Image (cartoon, rainbow, N blue to C red; front, side, top):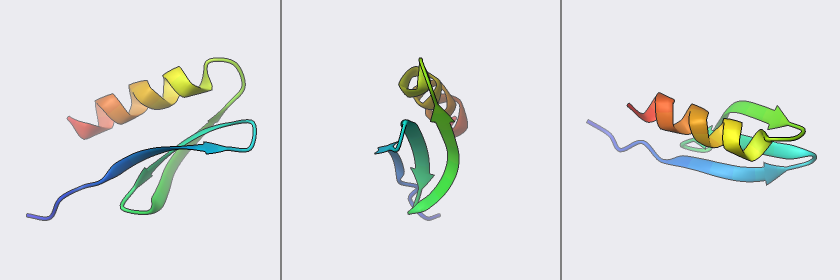
Length: 45
């Protein structure tokens, strides 16, 4: 089994979630950071 590295990165006008260097999703606007955290939390389980 390989390890999965999840990252939250600041992108222009929002936040993105990356897994092993590949962008999974990008959120923009108000609450983007919280939505990205919620996505990462749900995706990791």
